[in-house]
Image (cartoon, rainbow, N blue to C red; front, side):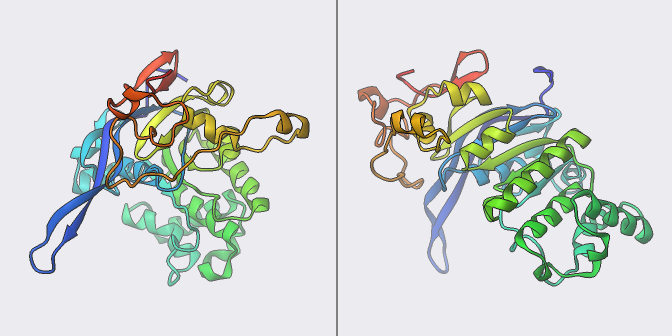
Length: 326
């Protein structure tokens, strides 16, 4: 994996959702600061895990990368093409190389369309192949994700959650993309099915050289599938490192608290371990705290934490953190 040839580059990405008031004349009274000044790289063939509590901005990052949400400011580059300035047909051509698997397998499939039509839709939108070629491609994709090609004329309600998520993966693969955003693809599934879907994703990555942004809040699953892991809190990335470095040597107090909640299968180690219990709740993204956003809940916060925003810096090769104390 060449560290000089990133596939996706994100620079100071910010996404605020305006809150409007008024029936006839609407005016903005505030904004939800979902993502605020986020920068990172994704290299070809790797899986970057993105973890954090619900509401931390993980899904917004994924959707904004693909321009499903247009960013408020900042830039997103895919192979040195700046996506934030693209529109219309130009953006549509690039979308062939970037796809998404959505979190809810029940809401992401059109209940009025057959499975065959759902998987063939990207091919139709991009004008790839004729009817017969698309039919063959759909059957190939179903078999690729472990489903029978006899299912093409069935509807989504006839499938379980795990099968629906496999259909979502087949749809994402239809255009032979390079980069896939996986937005909590297993959180809505039974534990017994989660491992099957993760194993499928790993096999497909190996076979087709795919690059993943894997969004989740299950830290043990992220450790299993990711090469590097980024931790988000209230719209900011607070720490980014390789999987083993982050899990063995977490530096940010929030990362340490998250990892202390992950169960250890060894009961002796589990008893010895010190749990870090965070007090209070996550502040509102409409009015985030001054300085470091984690300071109201941080067990080791000092005065500067509530006054100055910490710098995003590389403290050791490949290990980035935003914390005054580190």
